[in-house]
Length: 255
Image (cartoon, rainbow, N blue to C red; front, side):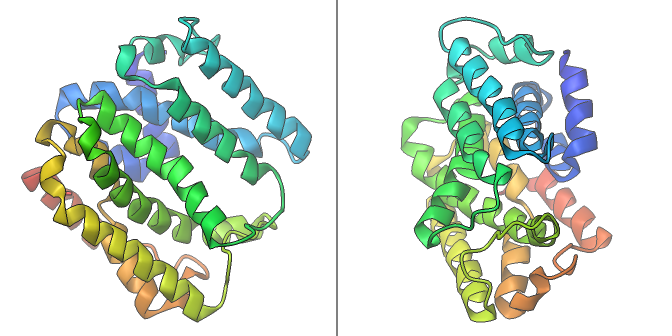
């Protein structure tokens, strides 16, 4: 699979992340497209079958393939070559953790508590954003900042997906009561604030890996104010607000 094919896959399957990445310099896009195309494959794998064991087998294939990548074996998948070309900045253990976390999607069990929920957001959104930042040259001291921002971004995306999860008979939130949802949004905003206060630790060259969280603050603020908005598609931003946010991102690079 070429870089152009990776970008096309992300555009079709993850349009918001595609739009955010288009605000990045061309060189950064070339590093991020394969990662985001892989993330799309991992996100889709649990839904490949209604039978949980079969879905888990699809994820296990990726776990094994990514473990092989750590030893220099290119995954036997169209995306395998472009992943291998990313070099030593690609950490297969981060990618394996994303795949392992996606096992939750295969089953119908709720999160046992908020700690398990937070761990899931960090294993998916946190590892994805940190891996992207590593690919763009972020130093180790930036990890906590990136993960704070990723938690807010991942939580916002998760809240938007609540109706889709519930339509598939999943239990996406540890506590569905309005007060608990508002509190969750508040925690997400606090993590975004903490990341913003330490923004200087993320070098400008790595910032595009954080761009896909550009809508998070708006969505979390809306959820905190009206937690019932997670029902239906009521968290979606207007096209005008979306375009304005992307324009600001492209002009300032400020995540």
